[in-house]
Amino acid sequence: MVGITSYGAYIPLYRLNRAEIGRAWEMPAAPGERAVANYDEDSLTMAVEAARDCLKGIKLDSVDGLFFASTTSPYKDKQTAATIAMVLGINRESVTMDFSGSLRCGTNALRAAVDAVRSGSANNILVIASEMRLGYPAGANEISFGDGAAAVLVGNEAVIAEVEGSYSIYEELQDFWRSDKDLFVRSAEDRFIVDEGYNKVIPAAVSGALKKFNLTSKDFSTCVLYVPSQRQVGTLVKKLGFDPKTQSKDMLFSNAGDVGSAMPMMSLVQTLEEATAGNRIILVAYGNGCDVFSLKIADDIEKAKVKDRMGISRFIASKKMLGNYNRYLRWRELVTVQPPARPPIEFRLPGPQALWKENEKELRLRGTKCKNCGTPQYPPQRVCVNCRAKDNFEYYSFLDKKAKVFSFCHDHLMATIDPPVTVAVLDFEGGGRMLVDMTDRDPAECKVGMPVDLTFRKLYYVGGIYNYWWKCRPAR
Image (tube, rainbow, N blue to C red; front, side):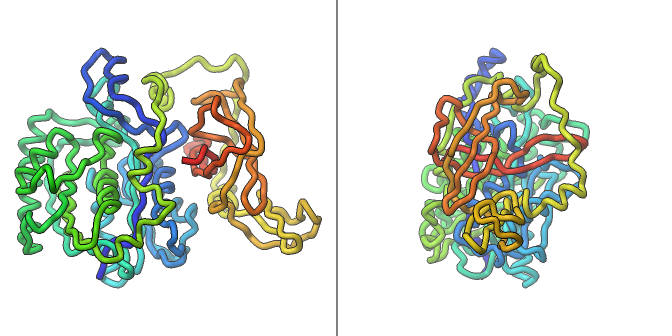
């Protein structure tokens, strides 16, 4: 039996009320709010967060594949999946792949993973979909879009949701697109997209899938349907023969936004959080065609509901409202603001050789632990700071260790997109101390002793290279 064995998600802390966007441009806005990634987040960092949520309780050496799906990867010509795999610390012999170019690249990756496990070429593949798209300011997409990520582990043991079958069709249609010269997503006229896209492609795909699966709409407890339009979901669900009241699932439009290729998997994770054994789910994802999956919930579903997993529900509940639309514009660097009246900080180009040499220390946050006295240290040291023993250590990961703030300061003079710069000294459970920046924080709420989580974030961009490292954030 092949299917999903674990799941996880990530939704940024900050939300922007759509009414704020409407007020800024003096235009009507749909109700609700959209999730907004911080200035130091992107589709890669959010993918790491979702993957860590998914892998709680999973042995990393059992994962032998990682598929990353996004239309907003930080690089056009570099594999993001390899970076994520290095950060997570999965097996070096794992197969890594990037999927892009379509709103259904997430479900494309899911189908490829299922096929790979079913064929025997891999045993456990981590599939992650993550998006941070930009809509034109004062446009409908800016109001509807949201940021987030989801991850599922596909395997053949301890399956919680069996993938009974899949079905796909393609359609060449210029409805949503972003060329290699575009910053913002473009879209065609609504009526054209509805008439020639949703209303034709989705019914054809679902009809073909049900015929292939030898099932009817009544055989499913939940229909998870993604189309990039909240207004069309209910209409299409009913048109497909499902009951919008009992079989349809809220697609997170109102409290997170349209998260593009990550939306089907995020909604699937939300459904799995509430599913019980015997339920059957139909997953339908639109984008230059349509992917359809039939999933049956297995008896082990309760074992997957790990206590400390955030998932969709807890991330939705954990939020802070972004005070105003101008802050969003600043975070996305869509406006130029007055720089400090001092010489700018010049970041050195992080050479590829230097970055490669520091992979274990920087990406995996690996320090050392003295074998003589047991003192953990970061960065790795040959001489113990406590007992002065030399070259008598073992490597030690700080990623899974809880931490509290020992001291902190706010720097109001340093140039930053989100002033002030908050720097914190952390004390780790089990020993070890580290100096890091703090993100996702309200400066007025920072205090000594507060618990924090480690989070993988962007530091800066220079010479065409994104420099990533770890920061801390107040525990969510």
